[in-house]
Length: 597
Image (cartoon, rainbow, N blue to C red):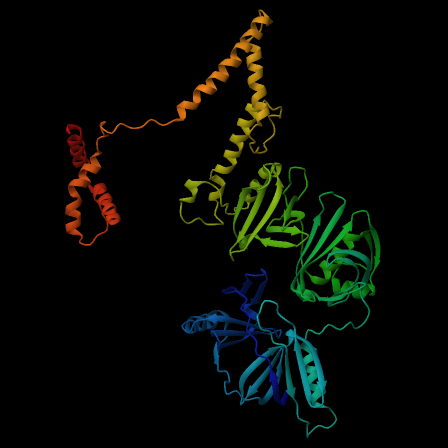
């Protein structure tokens, strides 16, 4: 569809650079975002369009598929064109064409709808393109259409709206061009409209973030949270990951939904939707669809009538509608047998779950860290007590997350897990720090010696031997040493003296103790004059000068003549460098001269 329009106003925005890696292979084109870890894959047989365009920060590629999807990637150099063009011809059978952009600044042109894009062209050259998936609302007026956009929190300036003037059509009076323009926009826009009945409804579910109890209405394309104060509509396209995590008490379950972009309430952003369920709650669920529709749409993943635990029903429905796998804890087991570790993050207590490909902390604030974005981890002592330690994670972007107040019994289990996942451990020891470049994903960590673990074990063993502790030999926990209090030291000395005076006569022992008391007092009185310093004799002999000082006195004038204007401090520095350069034989001669003097 084409419309002759006038662009009335466009808000200037700063483009958000989603950093990632783009790979061209013979089978497909794969892009992986560094921020979210989301992967876009384009099969080689689906490519139908490839354009090379000049953009604001270099050059970019626009790729189109047979299904109508459009992908844009920027950040290429001018010299990359020939190499990429030859690769596309040889492997994809698609020609990479150069497309010039219109930079005249005209606002009168033609609007073309091609797939998910609205292209504004001036004299058959594209001035700008609007991805219709970013449109949140479309309003019409007299000969005007206004497009509003989803806001991006990561940019300093966001594109708010664009207004188009659509002149009345002279050829077809039956159809209003404004309404036709709006219909084309709404057909591809991300405008959430609750049309039809919900597939199913879950009543009064406990939600931790955002906090409260919500009715969750499941629609074919989005999720509707209805609470007493706020409502949220979450498109399934914004769901990144699903997590099902058991609570440490083994009586509750967390169901976590990761969102990008997040849901908003005022200035608050919720990147995670966390639901809390009791394992004892059961539910019988009936989908608001016919059995034929359920079988055709979900292909056996769901049935019209289902029953079971409430958390199982919610996770099963979400998995089928979102079409994403549910992540559960792996083989990690803590000291107590649970699959999580109790810790604190930002003064709030929560649970840290080591997963097969990352860590997730629930619940306030929720944090998800993938192994591929972790630079290194660090095991540090607790700041307030030796009965706990801190677990620090540093990402490749320079952010640091500290999970504190972890019980010392969890150290061995957590260290073995981190070591098995081949993560780079920061405090491994001096020798390993001198090895230079270490590959984070190599197997070298398996054979490396953990200096910190051995030191903790050694100090714990010393403490156990000194205090005669009754701990069992089968425990492998690390013991943090605590110095014994003064009272314990005093009692141990007293018992030793008492045992050595087993007796012949108690009277003799008492007489000896009485005799010791005045001696201690006399010694204390006699020690006072010893603190006075003796005055040195003026005519006494002086200590002989060292070989270096003798050499310095003889070489001082020569250094001054060779370096005119040199200061006293620089003379000493220069002399030290010259002394270090002297040979061993020459220094021995200086030493012999010293002894002769």
